[in-house]
Image 1: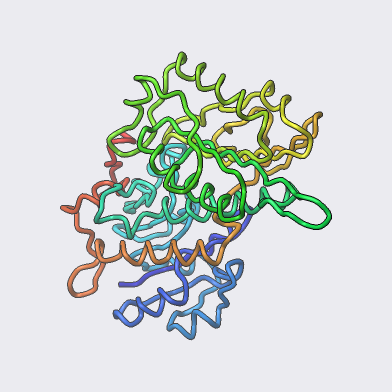
Image 2: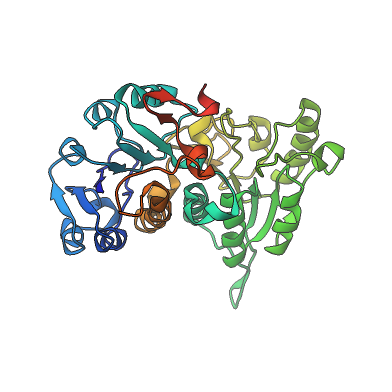
Length: 375
C-alpha cells in the first residue's frame, strides 16, 4: 500500500507519526512511503534519516496524500486536507472525536475511513497499540521533571556539613497511567510522595510504587470504576468529602500534579482557590488537565501563573510533545502494531471489519459516521 506520513508540527505539536525505524520496517514489508518535508525535524529526525530508511520526501501534506491508501498522522490534519484524499483511503491519529465531531463528519463526506487511535479498546491484544498509555507515560514523567525545575529546590533529603535539606513533598492527584508514572518519577527523585484516586484498584498500585494513598474510602469509593478501567463521575456528596480531605493534605505539599480526566467530559475541579491560598510561597501545582477546562482553579492553558501568595500554577500544554523524540518513537511503534489490522495478505490496504479493535476505533466507513459514541 501507499502510506503518507504528515507533517503535524506547529503550535504545541512536535511529534511525528512514523520514525525512520518504522519507515524502514514498512519499506522492507513492501509498502511505498512518502514523508512530508520537515515532518520529523522537531523530534530530531531529519529528512535524510527518512530517505536513508527508504522513504520519498515530498513538499507538503497535500502532495503526500495524493493517491495515499493510508495517512499516518498525530492530529489527523485539516478538513481541507481530507477533501483531497481518495475515496476509501484511511487516516489515523489522535482525532479527538468527542470534542470535534465535525471532523468525523468531514471524513464521512470525503469517503475517508478515520481511525481514532484514542478509541482503541483497552484489551490485552491491543496493549501494543495503546497510544494513550504510551503518551501518558511520558507525560506523567515530564510533568514531575518540569515541576522540579520550576520548584527550584531539591527533591531528596540531603544531609550535608552545612545542614540538612528536607525532602520535597509531592502529591499526585489521579493514578491512571500518567499519574502512576508521575508517582514513580517523584519517588525516584527522592520525594515524599502521596497520591489519590477515586478508583479502588489504584490504592494497591500506588502502594506498590512506595507512595501513600490518600482517599475517602467509603461504599461509593468501592464502586467507582467503569468496566473499561476509567474513573466514574462521583456524587456531589463524595466530592465534598474528598475535597475536605484534599484541602487538609494539600496545605503541606510542595508540588501537586493533577491528572484527572474522564473521557468525553469536562475535567473535574479538584483544587480551588481556597486550597491554593493555604499553600506556601514557591509551591508548584501542575494541571495536566488544563486542555479540558482544568483540575485547578486559576490555571491557564499554555501559561505558568503565579498567585498572590506565590504558588505557581503550571498549565503547559501537550506534555508528550515536550519529549518529542521518545513520544514519536512510542507513537510510531503503536501505529506499526496497528498496521496489520488494515493490511491484506498481499500487502494492500484492507481493513479487517470483523476485528473488534477496528470496530472500536473506526469513526467512519463508506461515507457514514459509524462509531456509536458519535451517533
